[in-house]
Image (cartoon, rainbow, N blue to C red; front, side, top):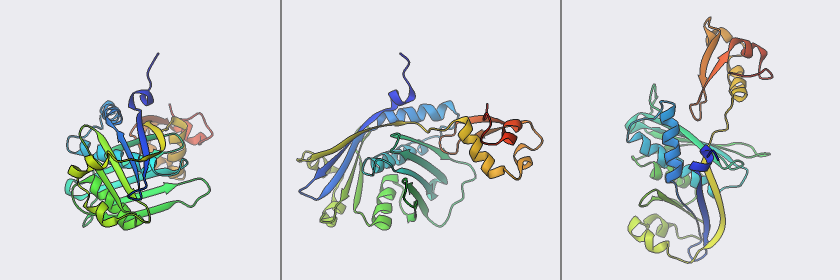
Length: 265
C-alpha cells in the first residue's frame, strides 16, 4: 500500500474543556506535520535555512490549534511579516478537509515599522473576517497570542513543549485573565495534569488542494485582459501555487480556453 502525504503528516489534535478555570485547550504533537512540510519545501527547493524553518513550524502549529478550536467549516489564512528577519510566513488551513499548508517568502519582502500579522477566515454563508495586527517580539507564538488579545479580545496562550508538542489555552468569559497571562512553562506541566473534559478529537495533515485547473482559474482571473504580460511571447509559462509553492506549466492554449478548458499540464 502506498502511503500518501496525508498519511505520513497526520496529527491528532485534542480539544478539552477546563471548567475549573473556564478555559478551552487544544494540544497535539505536531512532529509529523513539521517533517512533512520540510520534505515538501525541500522537494520544491523552497526550504529556507534556520531559523526561518522553525518560525514556519510555529506558525503552522498556531494555525493548527486555531482550527481545532474553531467551527468545522472554517477556512483560515494567515500571513506574518517578520520585521527582524525580513520574512513573510504564510499558513492556511481548512476545517472542511482537515488540511494545512504553508510557505516562507524570503525575497522582495516589504517591511513596515513593526512586524504585522494578517488573518482572514471564511465560512460558508458568512461574511469573510479580516484582521491586521501590529505585533512585537521575535516569537511567532507570542505574536499569535497578541493577535487574539488585541483583535479578538480573547485571552490566549500558546506554548511549545519538549519535542514538538504544542498547547493553546483560551479563556472563556469567566476566565481569570491575569492568571492565564502569568502562566509559565514551568507551571504548565502541573496544570496539564488537571481534570479536563474532552470536547473533540480531530486529525489534521499537510495538504493544499491545489490542482492545475484551479491554478489556471486563478491566473486567468488575474491576467485575463493582459495575457502578454504573463506569457511575454512564450507558448507556456511556469506558475506556482501561492499557498504551497507547487509549480505548474500553463500553456497559452489552455489560458485562451479559460477555466473551462483542460487546464495546465
